[in-house]
Amino acid sequence: MTYGYIRVSSDKQTVENQRFEINKFCAAHGMKIDDWIEETISGTKTYQSRKLGELLNNTQKGDTIICSELSRLGRNLFMIMEILNICMVRSCRLWTIKDGYHLGDDINAKVLAFAFGLSAEIERNLISQRTKEALARKRAEGVHIGRPVGRHTRIERLRLNKYHEQIVELVDSGKSLSFISRILNINRNSLRRYVARIGLK
Image 1 (cartoon, rainbow, N blue to C red):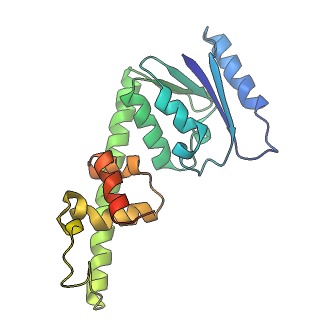
Image 2: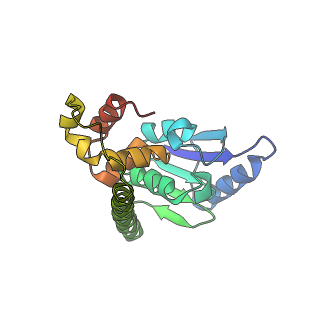
Image 3: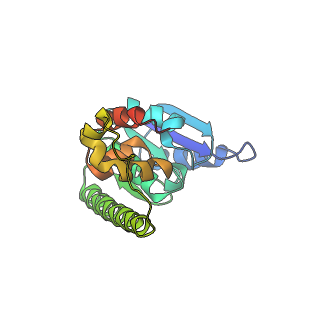
C-alpha cells in the first residue's frame, strides 16, 4: 500500500497544494496513492492523537508513506525521530518530497537510523544529567527527595521505580510513553502500568 499523508494546521490552509505535490511526485516515479490520510490539526499534537498514529499502527512491511515535508509529521525533532523509528521498525518506507528523504532499506536509512539512535542516546544522557543536577540542588536547599520517610509501599519495590524522577520529568514535559520507553530502554507496557500505578496523567 502507498499512502499519501496530508496535514494542515488550520481550516484556512488548503490541502490541495500538498496533494498536488504528492501526485506530481508519484507520477514522476511511476507510483499511485492507494489511500489518502488528511487531517486538520496542529503538528504539536502527539502523533498518537492524530490520524497519523492510526496510519502508523496499520502499516505493514513494504508499505510507503509519502508526505510533502517532514514538518507535516510533527513540529519537534524528537516526535519526528519517533515516527521515523516506527517506520524503520515496521520496514515501512517514508518519503518526504521537499526534504528529499527516502527512508527505506538503503544505506541512507541506515545512516539515519544511526543518527537517530545517537541523538536518542545524547538526549538520554542529558536528561539524566539534568535530573541529577536538579536533585542535587533540591538536596542543597534542604528539600526531602522521594516519598515521605517511613512510608513503605509496594510502588517502591517496582522495577521501574529507579527511573521514577526521569519518568516524571519526561511525562510532565509531554513526551509520549513510546518515546520514554525507547529513551530509557524499558518495556512500553511496563512503563504504561507504572505510570498508571503512580497516578501520572
